[in-house]
Each structure stands twice: as structure tokens, then as C-alpha cells.
Length: 70
Image (tube, rainbow, N blue to C red; front, side):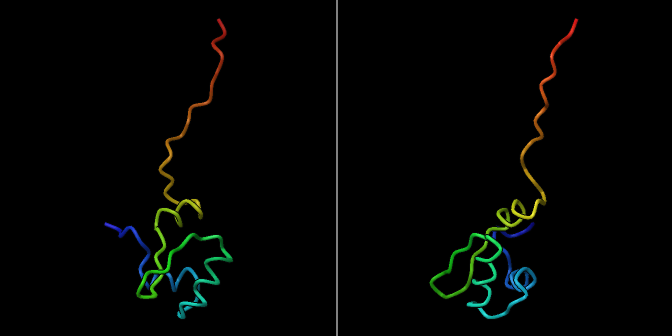
């Protein structure tokens, strides 16, 4: 099961950066919401990134309304 947050390796893959300050700039530039933890590590919700990039949407597809012609 995937973690709620991206791993350090996934953050590196997403941002192409290893340094925290550079990662934060990259995340801001991409519009990715994130929080800096007290220890300086970066927390990014996996679900936010999946929604932002259009993967694994959990929204059910809505049926379109069709008039009943008789």
C-alpha cells in the first residue's frame, strides 16, 4: 500500500532536485501544495499530486442527463 506522503525518492523524481530549498522552489513553481516539517523534510500528499497530474482520480464519473423522449 502506498504511503499518504511522497517518499524522498519520489520527491527527487518529481522535482529533479535533491536539496530541500531547490525542491521547495520547484514544488511552488509546479503549484504542488507542500508543508515543511519541523525536521526540515518536505511533506507532499500523494493524493494531491495524483489529482494535480490527472492520475487515479477518485471522483465517480457523473452520468450526463438525457431527456426521456417518448
